[in-house]
Length: 316
Image 1 (cartoon, rainbow, N blue to C red):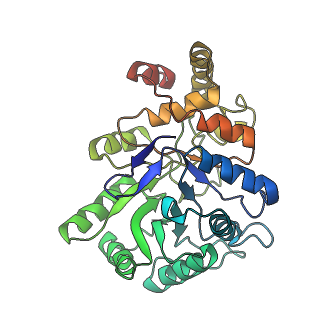
Image 2: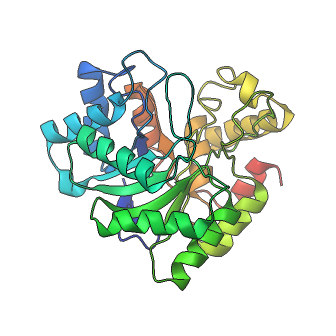
């Protein structure tokens, strides 16, 4: 699997990132080891987890970070592995209580303390703010994060579910003050079109056309979650119909099927390749629990599409 530098971070990461949210809960024992080792053997070194995973499952809070730490200790190779975790998530009552100011210095320090302890490491390579708090000026947030960088507990910074406008403001402030800014953004993004749903979490961000154009201009890397629309392309549109089933998504799915047949690839690989064929660096987060699905995704890492193919898939 090809490795690329993550923007200006100095971190060299595999083209695919493995999202280990279900590790320690939905994935355990030999299956967890098999998935981890298969990813590593293919050249994968980029892993994504979060402080809040998986509070919604009984005894699941912190399980993902603990499982990843255990795997790294047992299998070795820490110096070759890039650990990305997220903190400063707002409250989700009653299972995940948080302070109102969830990006305060105290909240950030506490989240990092717990993540380091669970992972069993002395620093985190890439630290995301899981959500934004628009009540806070971006300069204040950048200062809080850089204080933790100076402590040596986190190396580089990233933003999850932030708008491109706030990321741009934060990075402008960082550049003007000689501080580290965000090296990557982690929004939801895929070839499918997400339906507007009543009751959906308003703090989660889906990358839109204008956002993509901003990334093309800025060159800021994207590490998207749900890159195959929660299995929409892997299952032929059946699994996630409520979230992604609409005329636009169906048209893109059908075109992806045509291109998959022409190239001798799976539809899922076409959806991943569409992301990785953008003019800025994209590192899709694959979160599968199935070894066959993992192997299929890994096989997409070397596939690049032409601009004409990407536009045709999109329906432009």
